[in-house]
Length: 235
Image (cartoon, rainbow, N blue to C red; front, side, top):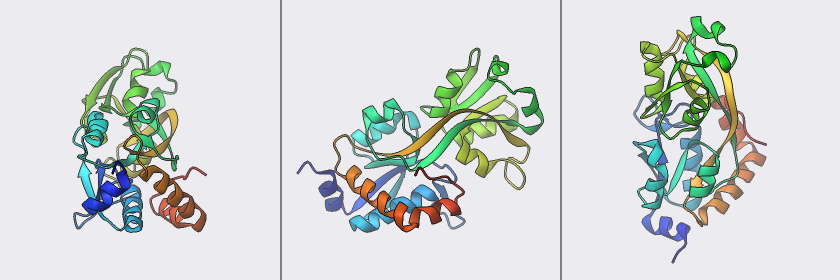
C-alpha cells in the first residue's frame, strides 16, 4: 500500500520532525515536548489513533532528506512555506503568520533603521532557514550559518555576531525583559511569511491535516492555542 496514512497507522506512530524552537516546539520543566506545533501534532495523532513521537532534526538544512528516508513522517516546526518547501513536501494549508526579524543588542537597534544600514554587519542564522535567505538578501552582509536559531541568539548575546535573523515568534518569546536575552531586542522586519506542515510528496496525510485544521479553526481549538502561545493564525 502506497498510502502514507496506512504506513503511519501500521507503525502505530507519527514521527514528527522538530527543532527546539519556542513557542512552536520546546521542552517544559518536566522535559516533555510542548508548544503550539507540539500540541497541534498531538491532537492530529489522537485523530489518527497513533502515538506522537518527536524527532529532533539535528541539521535543519537536511529536513527534506529526513522526510524522504522516513526517519520522520512530517516536518512540523514553524516551517515557513517557500518554493523549496512546496517542491520537496506535500505542504499543508498555511496556519500561522510569521516574519523574519532582526534581533540585536537593544542599545544598537536605533542605529539600524533601514536595510541599507545593515551592510557590512555579521549575521548569525539557522542553516537552511528562511532567516538565512533573508540575511543573504542584505547587500554586504556577512552571514554565518549555525545549527539552530538558539545558537544564532547566543552569538548575538556573546557579541560574536552583530545580529541574527530569526522568526518573529521566537524573537518575541526569547528576547526583552524577563527572558534569557533581556539585553536583546527586535529590530527591522525583513520578510513576512506563513507557516505550513510538510508531509512526504503525494502523502494522503496532508488532506487529513487540512480537514482537521479547518475544523479546529472553526471550533476555536486553534484560537485557544494561538492565544496561549501568543501567535497569529492565518484566517
